[in-house]
Image (cartoon, helix red, strand yellow):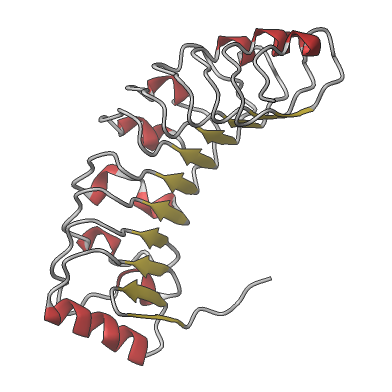
Length: 232
């Protein structure tokens, strides 16, 4: 049976790990008195407010995707490094400015202004699918190691030039052509996924050439290659 009431967790000061994803919880209030909580998984519930976690000074990971959050209605703990907010009707990310997040997921939200991403200096992994993005320059590309921007309307991937350590998934965008000298993430060993894009013949030939030269990892409709060394 799915859980809807977590009052039993109230008054557990030593609680450090909570995984209550895919339930029917609508309030996190009982967790406000758990100062040692460092991991909280509450994705796929009915939560409307993050205010109860504002005072959790040891919280490092908050996974709250798939809820009913319309706003980030509190100053989140400065200790947060991982934040999952995808599939919420959130419209603004401004309260996140200055946090030390290394991972952020905001796919399928109602966010349209991504300027705050420039105020997340530690950010390395970003999931930003289905946001209506048309220009890759809205992302802090130079600092990222991994970007998922699937199901957007990006047509120009020239901003990826010289970003050899970036792995980027641009599946289902509007990329048609590539610059004749395009190298992008393959300049060292990043990855580029372009499946589901209407690539013209020349663009596909350029990607095939990168594969032939064993540069990086590329994938597009009908072909793919991966010549990046396996790291352990």
